[in-house]
Length: 447
Image (cartoon, rainbow, N blue to C red; front, side):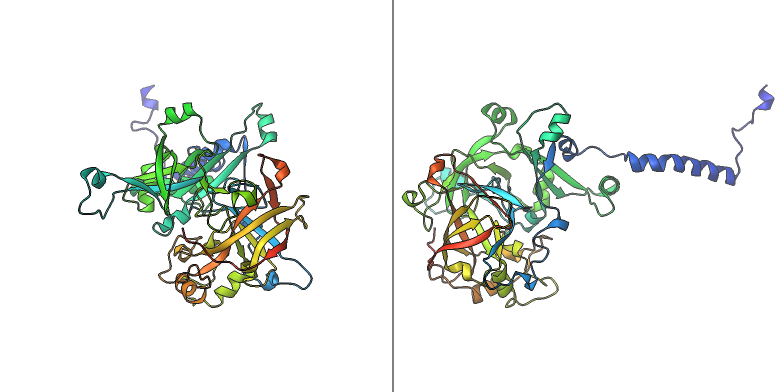
């Protein structure tokens, strides 16, 4: 019997080896394509019970933003062209077709901000040791860390149909943050391969972070190690919930933040009061408030104003067009003459062809005084060394309240029907028309 077996295993020639290898590949390739050897991401689980909010890029209402079709037309009122929210301050926005308006602005807007822990430097000579050693949290934006523009934020809302199929009930919404991350060596190569197998040839490796939208209950705060701490935003200090335990170390390295990195969630019971140019509590019939917005609840941009200003901005290889998204608006209108919005004092959005049946009014509080953030390209996170900041200061220093700063856009405060009582909310949607109820001049009041 032993004489019938080859002494050194199978004796295969080259063609046999090729046939064996081809057979194995023919079996494995379909399996890899259908069931790629990649780990599940957090968003893969949410797909079963939630739906991602917002418009895909292919359906964006801003695809034509550089077109002349947005010019004013005789006899036609301006209209609401697009809506954008930024759940995490200075990160990628989410374009919507409609949105709920609440006293602090659009629902889900600027609920979170990143912050860095800074030492009190420089300090006075006569400062105490305690003062010298005390660190403070300060918010960060694309002005310091331009890669925040590449942090994509997805909003996942519970889907009643999906939940019914899964025999589940929940009202909990989630945010998923995604940022590019590739390790060195073979790990980076493997993450690139798995990303492309899972999401297509254009996909790059990234890390996801899952965050609850609703403010956590006391038990969850304790369980997850969240802490209430003071954070400074411009000249204000607000007590908010630091959820830094949710952040992986890779995010800090990706952004280039050398100090300790925190993630603060605004406390709905400690919203920041808005004064200065906003309507008084008596006039608005409630105290205007905001979350982690810079100063006012909402920001409006007129496409024709952006186009007119863009025509005066020098262009180069890294700045070929000036997207309205550089200015991080919430409400984008078209069909209004360039800079006409600077004369508006009170506007009312009417149904138009939006599919809604309600009106929503806004107090147009003041001009938007610009910092250098619009120098960052929102699509790439690359900062231009000069523009449009230089042109804003040269061409748009139009407000005597901020004579050394450029202005573009208007800050809004929502107004509500007094009959709503404490249930102040309304809806706005793309296609609504703009009715100007009051006009006048604006003078910016500094913080």
